[in-house]
Amino acid sequence: MNTPTKQQQWEQEHLWHPYAAMPSQSRVYQVLSAEGIYLTLENGKEVMDGMSSWWCAIHGYNVPELNLAVETQLKSMAHVMFGGLTHQPAIDLAKTLVHITPQPLQHVFFADSGSVAVEVALKMAIQYWRGIKQPKKTKFLSLRHAYHGDTLAAMSVCDPESSMHHLFAETMPKHHFTDVDAKSIKKQLEKHHHEIAALIIEPIVQGAGGMSFYNKTLLSEMRALCDEFDVLLIADEIATGFGRTGELFACNHANISPDIMCIGKALTGGYMTLAATLCSSQISHGIHQQKGNVLMHGPTFMANPLACAVAKASIDLLLSSPWQQRVQTIAQQLNQGLAPAKQLPQVADVRVLGAIGVIEMKENINMDKIQSFLLEQGIWLRPFGKLLYTMPPFILDKQDVAKLTQAMCSAAALA
Ligand SMILES: *Cc1c(COP(=O)(O)O)cnc(C)c1O
Image (cartoon, rainbow, N blue to C red; front, side):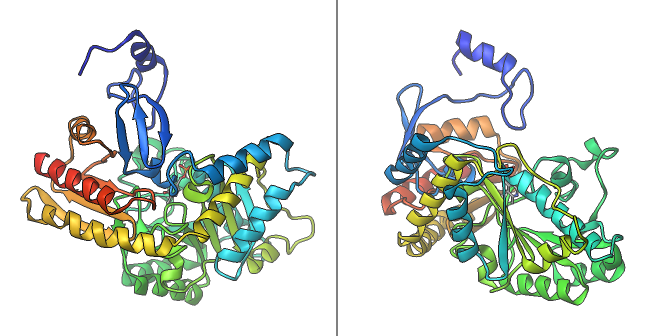
């Protein structure tokens, strides 16, 4: 590594990055611009983004349709408050979301990030049970390896080990956890259903908690168990929504509908921060059962017009593209291309679902070393823990995927 420049030194001492120390210990790379599937780094080098900027940029970068949506909206207004005011971008996007999500989800709350959308979902569930006079139901049931965000309540339903619950033990509410199988879930519900407001899950793919997949039968069973024990089902589709797993939403794999659904990440095609929480009429009616009760949340930047406009454009672009075929093709090629890594003694598992490819190592990955090796190969990835994984934009062609998987296999061999 070269000696840091003055600016790099200043940044290391003043500017926090995600999950980082201050002053910073690890290397960051400056991006000058992004176009298609490529990031241009400070040395002028172009690298393929295999991360879609943390699952978001499903169409790649500098997308003409999305640029146009932002520019057009900017000419009328960048933002107005949503309290007492409304605007077309919010209405149009909400209509689209009600239309494309499972039918019972009819009501939309716009939040400014995924974690906040999860907070809103948890509050909806608690207010629902209060509204229908079952105020004891205030706890949540969550899965091992779950990840639902970084704010305190969202973190309290994350896996206790990977999200470092012990650091916040005194301030965080305590909830129930279960292994990711129907028997354990049933056991927890039998024991605690009288105090459980909802089961919160990431359907089919558990993302930041370990990039693990479970089958659609289990998803159906979860829905059935929630019905049996009178517990709501919250589906956190923030990572899985908008085609990533091969279905528009992961709940569609099992044809189930949650009572409450969170979406975010790819919602705006990676252009701006925006998330949403949707719920069924049963939930909204329950919350408002007692006269005067309202949903107690209202972010300053709720339904930001620029973000809503670009989200609508991103969904239109996705739905007018052969996205399902693209994701299927990427899945096949990831399967083929990552298969050789299975032979490596240092590799524990290789798995693929939709446009998600994972090489799980037996030991933790030296991120700085592997990242700089991958950059030499022209690839941007950000491994974590034992996981070397990709969630590329859906616009990768055959050669792109081949280059990506070759680099990943070589990196795994080096690790
Ligand atoms: C990323 C993520 C979140 C948190 O979203 P932020 O926008 O980072 O707050 C919540 N749930 C899941 C499943 C996620 O992948």
